[in-house]
Amino acid sequence: MTNLEKYNNAFIECFGITEADLPSLSYQQIEAWDSVGHMQLIAALEDAFDIMFDTDDIIDFSSYEKGKELIGKYEVEL
Amino acid sequence: MTIQQVASDLLASNMFLLKECGHCIIVDPCENASNYDPSLTYDFIFLTHEHYDHISGVDKWRERTGAQVICSRACGENIQDAKKNMSHYFGSFCQMQAWETYDGKTETADYVCCADKVFENDISFTWQGHDVRLFSAPGHSAGSSCMFINENILFAGDCLIPGFPTETRFPGGSKKRWQEETLPKLQELPEQTILYPGHLMPCRLFDVLRSYHR
Image 1 (cartoon, each protein chain N blue to C red):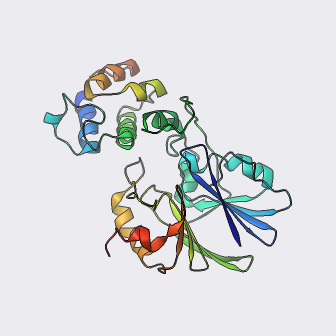
Image 2 (tube, rainbow over the protein chains, first blue to last red):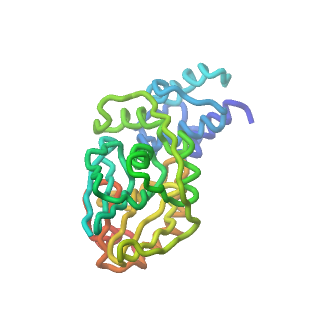
Image 3 (cartoon, rainbow over the protein chains, first blue to last red):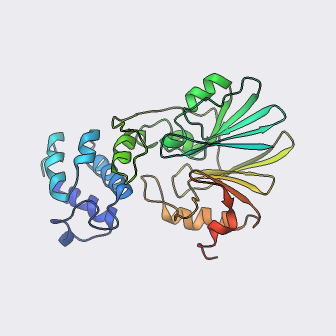
């Protein structure tokens, strides 16, 4: 599985959505991505890539696209 | 027996102090130890589950009282891990809430602690003449459990919060376990049981379970 697939799967598994939903997805745009869902997502990404997000990055992780930018800080190439 | 409720500064989580004949049980200790009474003998500290807002005062109260910390085996494992007990995420989680209850602290807590005694499924004993049963109640978290006293008082942590469906989406939570393992246990409890939840005010268990059809 590529890193991008792992990244996408975290969203799909946590929020019960499809890949087509991903590009425009942002925090609180769907019911599942509330503060609790956000913690689910963060934990899933941390497990998938064996990383630990900084608190500021957890808060700044506001969308699918923003997340791609942030996860790059942890030496993850998507 | 008197039951004192103390709302913590962490998401207003409830700590309870049960007092009987000069003895005390602490449920879900928070860091606020202003209610410590040196004239009491503190027999044990019970943790309803491993989430940080319910364990933040474990070390402070254990040090002050010498009381043993008791919880489920899964809880005992998870409180030793800052990710599994959610303390690592707590600052950011509170920031993302609609309501401000963390006084602007955004740094990670990374708090860990340990239990002195753990149980697997359930244990029963007598405390100051009261019948006490601790039983596992996974779903909100892997380590969730309840304390049931005298067949009519239930400390359930975040298993049941009045007015809110049980949250099972936190890492380690399980909707399946909640529905298949825990909810049936709670539905078998006497209707007159008073629920002391992890947040908000006590209420009748029956009123909270009404939304969960048998």
